[in-house]
Image (cartoon, rainbow, N blue to C red):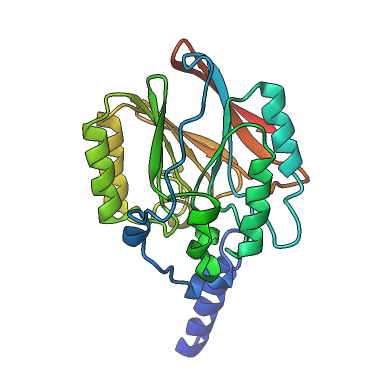
Length: 277
Protein backbone atom coordinates (compact mmCIF):
# COMPACT_ATOMS: atom_id res chain seq x y z
CA UNK A 1 0.00 0.00 0.00
CA UNK A 2 1.39 3.40 -0.97
CA UNK A 3 2.32 5.99 1.66
CA UNK A 4 -0.24 8.37 0.12
CA UNK A 5 -3.04 5.81 0.50
CA UNK A 6 -2.00 5.07 4.09
CA UNK A 7 -2.16 8.80 4.92
CA UNK A 8 -5.59 9.07 3.29
CA UNK A 9 -6.98 6.07 5.21
CA UNK A 10 -5.53 7.35 8.49
CA UNK A 11 -7.14 10.74 7.98
CA UNK A 12 -10.47 9.16 7.05
CA UNK A 13 -10.39 6.96 10.16
CA UNK A 14 -9.68 9.95 12.36
CA UNK A 15 -12.58 11.87 10.85
CA UNK A 16 -14.92 8.91 11.38
CA UNK A 17 -13.94 8.74 15.05
CA UNK A 18 -14.43 12.46 15.51
CA UNK A 19 -17.81 12.39 13.80
CA UNK A 20 -19.16 9.64 16.07
CA UNK A 21 -22.00 10.23 18.53
CA UNK A 22 -19.61 11.90 20.95
CA UNK A 23 -17.20 13.79 18.69
CA UNK A 24 -18.38 15.87 15.77
CA UNK A 25 -16.13 17.42 13.18
CA UNK A 26 -16.35 20.70 15.09
CA UNK A 27 -14.28 19.03 17.87
CA UNK A 28 -11.45 18.58 15.40
CA UNK A 29 -11.09 22.32 14.78
CA UNK A 30 -12.72 23.79 17.90
CA UNK A 31 -10.70 25.82 20.42
CA UNK A 32 -12.49 27.29 23.42
CA UNK A 33 -12.13 30.95 24.24
CA UNK A 34 -11.64 32.05 26.95
CA UNK A 35 -9.44 29.31 28.41
CA UNK A 36 -10.40 27.20 31.42
CA UNK A 37 -7.92 29.22 33.52
CA UNK A 38 -9.85 32.38 32.65
CA UNK A 39 -13.30 30.84 33.05
CA UNK A 40 -12.80 29.52 36.58
CA UNK A 41 -11.97 32.98 37.93
CA UNK A 42 -14.76 34.72 36.00
CA UNK A 43 -17.11 36.31 38.56
CA UNK A 44 -19.60 37.64 35.99
CA UNK A 45 -22.32 35.69 37.78
CA UNK A 46 -22.80 34.95 41.45
CA UNK A 47 -22.08 31.44 42.70
CA UNK A 48 -25.31 29.46 43.14
CA UNK A 49 -26.66 29.30 46.69
CA UNK A 50 -26.93 26.03 48.61
CA UNK A 51 -30.34 24.32 48.42
CA UNK A 52 -32.68 24.63 51.39
CA UNK A 53 -32.84 20.98 52.49
CA UNK A 54 -35.30 20.41 55.39
CA UNK A 55 -33.27 17.53 56.83
CA UNK A 56 -29.63 17.82 55.69
CA UNK A 57 -28.82 14.36 57.07
CA UNK A 58 -31.60 12.60 55.16
CA UNK A 59 -32.47 13.61 51.61
CA UNK A 60 -32.48 12.53 47.98
CA UNK A 61 -31.06 14.23 44.91
CA UNK A 62 -31.00 13.31 41.22
CA UNK A 63 -28.21 13.62 38.68
CA UNK A 64 -28.17 13.38 34.90
CA UNK A 65 -25.99 14.86 32.15
CA UNK A 66 -25.89 15.85 28.49
CA UNK A 67 -29.22 17.62 28.16
CA UNK A 68 -28.40 19.20 24.76
CA UNK A 69 -31.26 21.70 24.73
CA UNK A 70 -31.93 22.87 21.18
CA UNK A 71 -32.76 26.30 19.82
CA UNK A 72 -36.35 25.35 19.01
CA UNK A 73 -37.14 22.36 21.24
CA UNK A 74 -36.42 20.81 24.61
CA UNK A 75 -34.96 17.30 24.89
CA UNK A 76 -37.70 14.69 24.66
CA UNK A 77 -37.04 13.53 28.24
CA UNK A 78 -36.87 16.94 29.95
CA UNK A 79 -40.38 16.56 31.36
CA UNK A 80 -39.67 12.99 32.40
CA UNK A 81 -36.68 14.01 34.50
CA UNK A 82 -38.78 16.62 36.30
CA UNK A 83 -41.46 14.03 36.97
CA UNK A 84 -38.86 11.59 38.29
CA UNK A 85 -37.44 14.24 40.64
CA UNK A 86 -40.93 14.91 41.99
CA UNK A 87 -41.70 11.22 42.44
CA UNK A 88 -38.46 10.63 44.34
CA UNK A 89 -38.97 13.69 46.54
CA UNK A 90 -35.65 15.14 45.38
CA UNK A 91 -34.31 18.13 47.30
CA UNK A 92 -32.35 19.26 44.23
CA UNK A 93 -31.07 18.02 40.86
CA UNK A 94 -27.75 18.07 39.01
CA UNK A 95 -26.91 18.20 35.29
CA UNK A 96 -23.27 17.28 34.65
CA UNK A 97 -22.63 19.39 31.57
CA UNK A 98 -23.68 19.85 27.93
CA UNK A 99 -26.76 21.83 28.84
CA UNK A 100 -26.87 23.44 25.40
CA UNK A 101 -26.31 21.57 22.16
CA UNK A 102 -24.29 24.20 20.31
CA UNK A 103 -23.79 26.94 22.92
CA UNK A 104 -26.31 29.36 21.39
CA UNK A 105 -28.30 31.84 23.44
CA UNK A 106 -31.68 30.37 22.45
CA UNK A 107 -30.58 26.96 23.76
CA UNK A 108 -29.50 28.46 27.06
CA UNK A 109 -32.82 30.31 27.26
CA UNK A 110 -34.72 27.03 26.91
CA UNK A 111 -32.53 25.40 29.56
CA UNK A 112 -33.04 28.34 31.93
CA UNK A 113 -36.82 28.20 31.46
CA UNK A 114 -36.80 24.46 32.20
CA UNK A 115 -34.80 25.02 35.39
CA UNK A 116 -37.21 27.78 36.42
CA UNK A 117 -40.14 25.37 36.13
CA UNK A 118 -38.43 22.48 37.91
CA UNK A 119 -39.74 23.11 41.42
CA UNK A 120 -36.43 22.45 43.21
CA UNK A 121 -32.96 23.93 42.56
CA UNK A 122 -31.00 22.57 39.60
CA UNK A 123 -27.21 22.84 39.60
CA UNK A 124 -24.99 22.35 36.58
CA UNK A 125 -21.43 21.89 35.43
CA UNK A 126 -20.17 23.23 32.11
CA UNK A 127 -19.59 20.81 29.22
CA UNK A 128 -17.76 21.00 25.91
CA UNK A 129 -20.94 21.65 23.88
CA UNK A 130 -21.76 24.58 26.17
CA UNK A 131 -18.73 26.44 24.79
CA UNK A 132 -19.43 26.01 21.08
CA UNK A 133 -20.10 29.19 19.11
CA UNK A 134 -18.59 31.36 21.88
CA UNK A 135 -21.10 29.79 24.26
CA UNK A 136 -19.24 30.98 27.34
CA UNK A 137 -20.77 34.41 26.73
CA UNK A 138 -24.15 32.81 27.51
CA UNK A 139 -23.17 30.48 30.35
CA UNK A 140 -22.69 32.77 33.39
CA UNK A 141 -25.93 34.70 32.89
CA UNK A 142 -27.97 31.57 32.25
CA UNK A 143 -26.34 29.11 34.63
CA UNK A 144 -23.69 30.67 36.89
CA UNK A 145 -19.99 30.23 37.50
CA UNK A 146 -18.12 27.22 36.17
CA UNK A 147 -16.23 26.61 39.44
CA UNK A 148 -18.25 26.74 42.65
CA UNK A 149 -19.35 24.74 45.68
CA UNK A 150 -22.06 24.54 48.31
CA UNK A 151 -22.61 22.62 51.54
CA UNK A 152 -25.52 20.41 52.58
CA UNK A 153 -25.15 19.06 56.10
CA UNK A 154 -21.60 17.80 56.46
CA UNK A 155 -21.01 17.32 52.73
CA UNK A 156 -19.60 19.78 50.19
CA UNK A 157 -20.59 19.60 46.52
CA UNK A 158 -17.89 20.88 44.15
CA UNK A 159 -18.74 21.78 40.54
CA UNK A 160 -15.69 21.84 38.28
CA UNK A 161 -14.98 23.11 34.78
CA UNK A 162 -13.67 20.25 32.63
CA UNK A 163 -15.20 21.49 29.38
CA UNK A 164 -11.86 21.36 27.52
CA UNK A 165 -11.01 17.91 28.87
CA UNK A 166 -8.70 19.41 31.49
CA UNK A 167 -9.07 21.30 34.77
CA UNK A 168 -5.93 23.38 34.23
CA UNK A 169 -3.39 24.61 36.76
CA UNK A 170 -5.42 27.55 38.09
CA UNK A 171 -8.45 25.40 38.89
CA UNK A 172 -6.32 22.67 40.45
CA UNK A 173 -4.73 25.26 42.73
CA UNK A 174 -8.16 26.69 43.62
CA UNK A 175 -9.43 23.20 44.39
CA UNK A 176 -6.40 22.28 46.48
CA UNK A 177 -6.78 25.50 48.47
CA UNK A 178 -10.51 24.90 49.01
CA UNK A 179 -9.85 21.34 50.18
CA UNK A 180 -7.24 22.54 52.67
CA UNK A 181 -9.99 24.49 54.46
CA UNK A 182 -12.75 21.89 54.12
CA UNK A 183 -12.93 18.83 56.36
CA UNK A 184 -16.33 17.76 54.99
CA UNK A 185 -17.10 14.69 52.94
CA UNK A 186 -17.17 15.70 49.27
CA UNK A 187 -19.04 15.11 46.00
CA UNK A 188 -17.41 16.18 42.72
CA UNK A 189 -19.51 17.11 39.67
CA UNK A 190 -17.91 17.72 36.28
CA UNK A 191 -18.49 16.84 32.64
CA UNK A 192 -15.50 14.77 31.54
CA UNK A 193 -14.98 11.53 33.49
CA UNK A 194 -11.91 11.36 35.69
CA UNK A 195 -11.13 7.73 34.94
CA UNK A 196 -14.08 5.80 33.42
CA UNK A 197 -12.49 2.38 33.73
CA UNK A 198 -10.37 1.36 30.77
CA UNK A 199 -12.23 3.52 28.26
CA UNK A 200 -10.38 5.38 25.52
CA UNK A 201 -8.55 8.63 26.05
CA UNK A 202 -11.49 10.46 24.46
CA UNK A 203 -13.80 9.30 27.25
CA UNK A 204 -12.00 10.91 30.19
CA UNK A 205 -9.83 13.84 31.24
CA UNK A 206 -7.08 14.08 28.67
CA UNK A 207 -4.01 14.70 30.84
CA UNK A 208 -2.78 11.52 32.56
CA UNK A 209 -0.62 13.44 35.04
CA UNK A 210 -3.59 15.64 35.97
CA UNK A 211 -5.77 12.56 36.50
CA UNK A 212 -3.16 11.03 38.80
CA UNK A 213 -2.86 14.28 40.76
CA UNK A 214 -6.64 14.47 41.13
CA UNK A 215 -7.01 10.87 42.28
CA UNK A 216 -4.39 11.51 44.96
CA UNK A 217 -6.00 14.81 45.97
CA UNK A 218 -9.49 13.29 46.13
CA UNK A 219 -8.36 10.22 48.06
CA UNK A 220 -6.67 12.34 50.73
CA UNK A 221 -9.55 14.79 51.15
CA UNK A 222 -12.71 12.79 51.69
CA UNK A 223 -14.13 12.66 48.17
CA UNK A 224 -16.81 9.94 48.17
CA UNK A 225 -18.65 10.35 44.89
CA UNK A 226 -17.91 11.61 41.38
CA UNK A 227 -20.86 12.49 39.11
CA UNK A 228 -19.96 12.96 35.44
CA UNK A 229 -21.31 12.80 31.89
CA UNK A 230 -20.00 13.18 28.34
CA UNK A 231 -20.29 9.53 27.31
CA UNK A 232 -24.13 9.28 27.22
CA UNK A 233 -24.24 6.01 29.13
CA UNK A 234 -24.43 4.93 32.78
CA UNK A 235 -21.30 3.40 34.22
CA UNK A 236 -19.89 2.87 37.70
CA UNK A 237 -16.15 2.61 38.42
CA UNK A 238 -14.57 2.13 41.83
CA UNK A 239 -11.42 4.20 42.37
CA UNK A 240 -10.15 3.11 45.77
CA UNK A 241 -12.86 4.17 48.21
CA UNK A 242 -14.44 6.56 45.69
CA UNK A 243 -17.46 5.84 43.50
CA UNK A 244 -17.33 7.29 39.98
CA UNK A 245 -20.72 7.38 38.22
CA UNK A 246 -21.34 8.44 34.65
CA UNK A 247 -24.90 9.76 34.74
CA UNK A 248 -25.85 8.95 31.15
CA UNK A 249 -28.01 11.50 29.36
CA UNK A 250 -31.13 13.61 29.66
CA UNK A 251 -31.19 13.65 25.87
CA UNK A 252 -31.48 9.89 26.15
CA UNK A 253 -31.19 6.84 23.98
CA UNK A 254 -33.82 4.43 22.66
CA UNK A 255 -36.45 6.97 23.64
CA UNK A 256 -35.49 7.14 27.32
CA UNK A 257 -33.52 9.50 29.51
CA UNK A 258 -31.08 8.18 32.09
CA UNK A 259 -29.55 9.33 35.35
CA UNK A 260 -29.03 8.34 38.98
CA UNK A 261 -30.85 8.88 42.26
CA UNK A 262 -28.58 9.45 45.26
CA UNK A 263 -29.99 8.78 48.73
CA UNK A 264 -28.34 10.29 51.80
CA UNK A 265 -29.38 8.63 55.06
CA UNK A 266 -28.05 9.52 58.48
CA UNK A 267 -25.55 11.83 56.82
CA UNK A 268 -24.03 9.04 54.71
CA UNK A 269 -24.50 8.23 51.04
CA UNK A 270 -26.66 5.13 51.38
CA UNK A 271 -27.20 4.34 47.69
CA UNK A 272 -26.72 5.48 44.10
CA UNK A 273 -29.43 4.00 41.90
CA UNK A 274 -29.49 4.13 38.07
CA UNK A 275 -32.77 5.49 36.71
CA UNK A 276 -34.59 5.40 33.38
CA UNK A 277 -37.30 7.96 32.66
